[in-house]
Length: 416
Ligand SMILES: *Cc1c(COP(=O)(O)O)cnc(C)c1O
Image 1 (tube, helix red, strand yellow):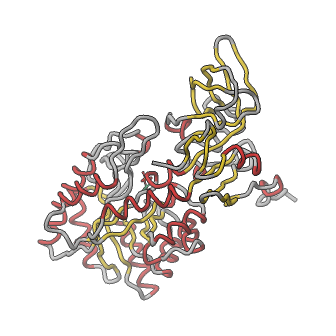
Image 2 (cartoon, protein in one colour; image 1 turned 90 degrees about the vertical axis):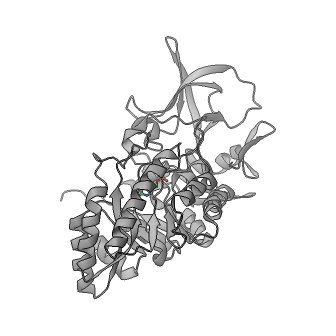
Image 3 (tube, rainbow, N blue to C red; image 1 turned 180 degrees about the vertical axis):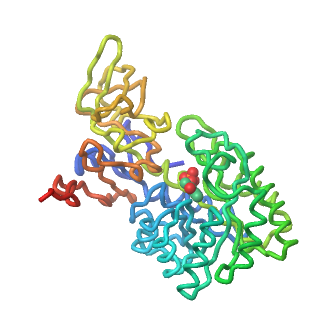
């Protein structure tokens, strides 16, 4: 459930009219609902209830510091994949002791910084990385907390670009190899084994792949016990899907219930989850203005002021996201439109063959845009990034302003 609903045929963001917000701030604009973010985070936190747990919000889904700050205030941990994300978490008031660091290519600088600020855990993705972390920890005179990211070889039944738990993917170490790597880790003086980690993919709309993965991890946990390695936590990653159109995504409570069934006898094993999309996707919309309507042969186009540089998902993953009118009280003819942006690429579309009642100058909103929207945006075609606005009840806050044109080339220099 989210707080973008119609009232008298006008789209609202909590208790504000979306049309009023964009008249004040301009378009293209991401609008987020704070109440929705809080509700979604609490759904995960409540689902795990009394079981020891930590919800680590996946920063890459939406790294705006205002969003990270809201998460930090709730007591959230964070799943990061770069030093940039770590610095954002710190600036936003996040607790480094609740940060887990994922990613296949952690650099020396990144590992050093993470050790200095004292993160909760490195999710190690290879033997080479394990040795590198051990070396750096030795130099700093610290012990590095680690878990191994295991690739359980399960098919997440999601888009191939966001499936990460198959043998052929670059992530983690195979479940067969993991026991051996743990035993190497046990011998390393500056490594502290904390847990076990996996993340099998994103936008999972069924629970079975999670359960298959958990089964395999439990077998490994038992083998490690035989080797005298006692784990403190099990990190099951993120990946819970959301409803973009009519998918039936499992609720966090349903997900948690099935995990508990798989972890009978492990009531003290802390569970870490790394949800991103399930918290942010439906807490945001992308609002754009219809610049032109045009008809070529039989096809109608709505040409809008947001493009693939603002929202890459349709172009990258053929993602389908709902597009709705901001004001349904206006008298408009209904037509089937391809909603396309200003970028000079044929893949520049927000949605194809959409039924919309619109005229030039109207606003439309792409729903479920809070995850992997602003975070994947670029300045392609030298377009300043879309602004971002946080709505809290009947107040709006500009949480990312539009860059000036000078700021677009501020980091560049002429050859003298
Ligand atoms: C992307 C990612 C997540 C978050 O995935 P969602 O599908 O947004 O929940 C969590 N953990 C890791 C390691 C990731 O790469």
